[in-house]
Length: 253
Image (cartoon, rainbow, N blue to C red; front, side):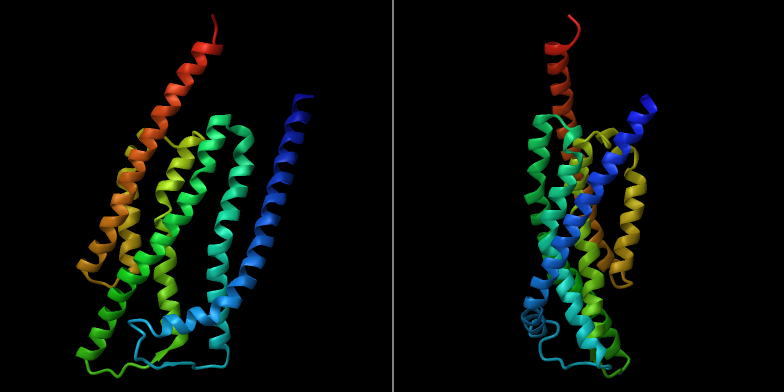
């Protein structure tokens, strides 16, 4: 009987997860439709901004403009669907949280959106120009005539913006996982060495092969990790206080 109840509970959780995923996919499709509506304006705007300003972006096949158009639609759609996806993630874990934890984790959604936008801004205005001008400078120094395709230019931009913007979600992810008691500050401290190694690898991948560029990206990511540890410690301390208060009120007397 107990096993049947466990299986029923598992099936109910899977059905709930499927329902949440369907809603997220529907929101993604709607967001992509909105993204495709704005994609042309975004492409034209970015084409006039440095480092693309004054350059001629070429299409080397009839499919390249379509692919770039779809990529921008998807990126804008992901940005629009992010709050919806975070809400359904919160709603899925909500039954396992206390009322005070439910309210606290719900407030993480606006913070996650803000950090994602900050990550996009940092990647586009700092990391992307730095990487682009590094490569362009090498081309000039060896006498190579630069001819850029729009797919290569915007693809290079996407490859930098997406990883950096996701890294900026680290504080919110850590706070959320701490709140649902998967992570704690002690565990994060023990994982610090491996986390630093992973962040070094990511910084080396998304930046030009020079030490200064890697440091410029690595330092903010390290600060984000340490900031995440501080936030986790704060959340964990409040959890301990709440546990003690609950035990004092409802524990054995």
